[in-house]
Length: 57
Image (cartoon, rainbow, N blue to C red):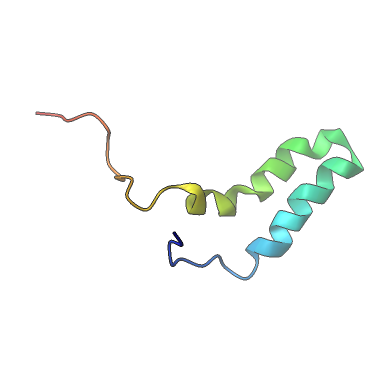
């Protein structure tokens, strides 16, 4: 099922940079991981609640 959300236009080039940076040198691996962060919200299920999973009374 598609969520109906779209990524910004700059997320695809940023994802490509995140994949290529570690190939240049492994010292850039953390920066490459941060470049992949804009795609993370799409991995969250649409039905997942945004609040705390613990009920507070």
